[in-house]
Image 1 (tube, one colour):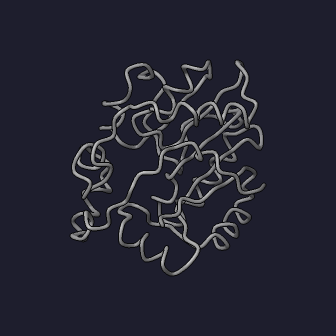
Image 2 (cartoon, rainbow, N blue to C red):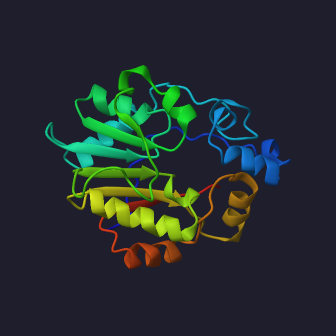
Image 3 (spheres, rainbow, N blue to C red):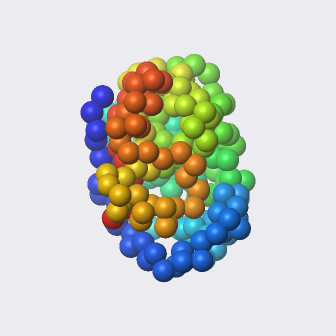
Length: 216
């Protein structure tokens, strides 16, 4: 399947590398717990405050149009955080579900989708084979070690009954972008140049679409 950017409508957040100048093992450990510090602490540890502001509305509509999502279709968002994309899916009539490993994110999710988020890890998705018509994973599976990342990609194939999968992962096109990535990113354990990612997708027989998150 081809490269496609379904997040093009998201506003670009500016990465101020000075905010991570003290990045160290302790910072990475705290961020990797995906707790309050990661979501709603300072920018040093993650988002610096992750609140609903409607920025996912256009993304939800783009996904619905691209995958031709109908009322009887089920959609899964893997690593859905506080469920803001799910909320915007629900508002346009999409039967959506999410899994998330952060208890903090689940407990602080958008109130409109509290019954739609389930605790779960991408390497073992807690749903039956072919349960979903569309499966989305945005900036999630690269937070796993390579062996588990491969398991997660295969799990996406397992739970999706169609080829309507979308996978976005961290990558870089050159040495400069890789340096920016290494200076900024806290939680990614698996990351490659696009060519290597595509080799992994092929190894997993990934049947969907993909895109890269590239810091510039």
